[in-house]
Length: 434
Image (cartoon, rainbow, N blue to C red; front, top):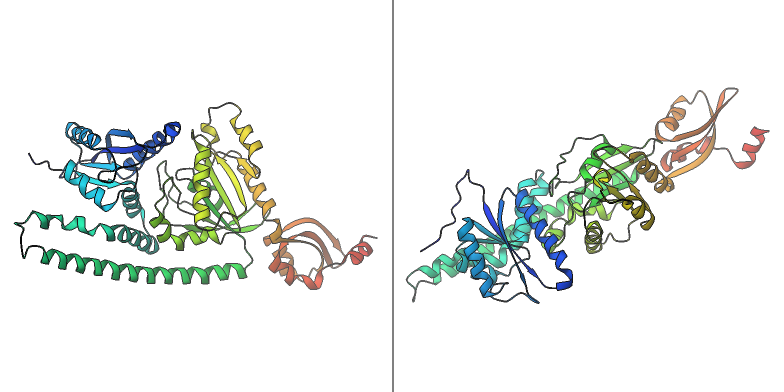
């Protein structure tokens, strides 16, 4: 009997998850990975109706899992009326073909699932271009799967030619589209470089939020930037990067970027496609690495983020570790322990707005090099310059002397140059004080 997996428009897609446990000692890693895969399915709008995990030293060439497990998965699909089977690792084109034939179900892997979620979330032109590029790079070696229906024809001479011709046409079209997308993204990168040059001329430091997906970056971004970007308790809630000008309590200004969340086993194709976006991380002066402290394996998530940062060339950036979701931490003494173990770290609850003053103070300390300390004796008639110090700098002390104002404070480098003619040298300062 032939099995069908047609999905009605109103029906939730049911899926069976499949994973391979390679190392007995690291079994918790695979269990955690499967739990994360289930969350990805939920994020994509599906429902998990079963899981199959096999212990294998290495995946098998034909099916990724053993032939016996294929039968077990098939029975699980029949019992749960599953529409699809989702593997926790990337499958080769041959494995995908073999599994679809054996299971009579749609078979996808973790990479394809993540690409599907990203396609749902992309809103800007840049995001859509990057997703399409990643999808086409994934599709290109798998095009033969789309033409397996030709093998069910009568066979013999004359039946294979049209299929081969169509396959070559499809490959050429996909490659041409990939070339066009790369050109479009290169134009996006050029525009970003122009914008970035403008920011550098303004001498405003750039800070990027990075971290594992669902660590609370967007919630933290909304508080720091007084913004209203989409934030939700789900994986990859934010896809398109957002940049806002932020002013700290000490009047120090910075450009803050909220970036896409990282994840374990993040597809390399996705990293390649998102290089234009990830340049915001590479070119940042400081990274705020947000960590979900309430997660049972937060340290492994930190390691996963560091791996991606190494891959994009941002591993040597100065980082502040922001341990978020402290309101959900149940382990006694955990907050105190991580703050001692990890230098340059703060503990906050972005949703409860707790510990955020400590974060802004930490930010101000790390960005102190972007400010110049000075003393100025400015005529009161230069009210515009005095106002600039108050608006863009931090005033420490003010003293009125005859028709002038003596100010001690910290100002950005670009403003320090404008105030040079009124700067007081050490000997002049001592004379004024005497």
